[in-house]
Length: 165
Image (cartoon, rainbow, N blue to C red; front, side, top):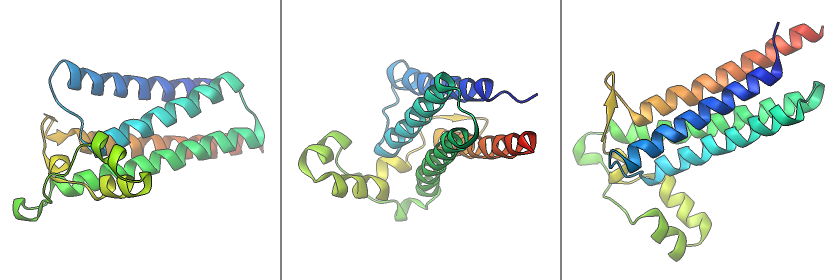
């Protein structure tokens, strides 16, 4: 039998584990997060907040659909960001954009909308592959995770709908 509380807490712990691993890579392996990586982390944090809130709230009916829809929207947004980074990583070296200023600098100097636009365009540092596991880069794994979260959440909506009829 499907239990929404178990679903939400499982997605929450998955996001926490992914964020913890990212922090491990940054602080213990010396891999600095590029601007697109930071936006992917923000997506994981938002998913974790949504799913933890849903776990605590234990919603039924429409609120349950709203929590899951929000999870899907944020996961797909994260997938788009990760997909952009994967695309940058697979560009031929001569087409990779030049490295831009750091995220802190962009947020301090430019209006927020301009800074976000610059980050999402990506830069040379976002195209660098600094770590691989089973031949996939961090961005490729992140894309898989975001798509997986989206699919599992969509399937849980379907299962929930089937149980209510």
